[in-house]
Image (cartoon, rainbow, N blue to C red; front, top):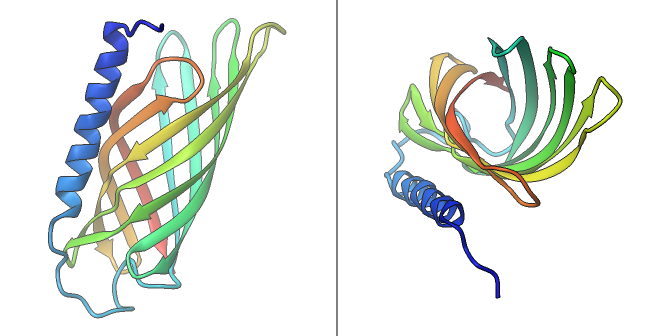
Length: 181
């Protein structure tokens, strides 16, 4: 019989909180907008990306472009590729590949809530010749998008990552920039 640790219960509690938050926010009534005139119309392509750089025992650069497509009103499917380089001795290079689905909710004509969930496969290479490996994660992010001008937005929102094979979960705040056509 497998014993559950406090960390397992904390993970379940955190995942339950995130799911409850997404369900509550998805229950908001979308603002009335003309179909095809706003973000989330069928046939729209959305290009997004997040760029992160920071210092932490060296420096790290993270690039994650993605492409999504709205298959029906407000429902998107998409994919992402990612590259992360972490300096140091040894340095690490991480390549990510993922698929996701999302739902766009118009709060106002200039603000959209776009929660997404997906599966991301990551492969890590270590410069010193040893170590490295791969992992698969459930990734949930829920950004609020601010449409500054037509077809361009910036946004921020919570994210949560749950390892499906091994490792620790992570959560925090993530920013995004993008556009649609």
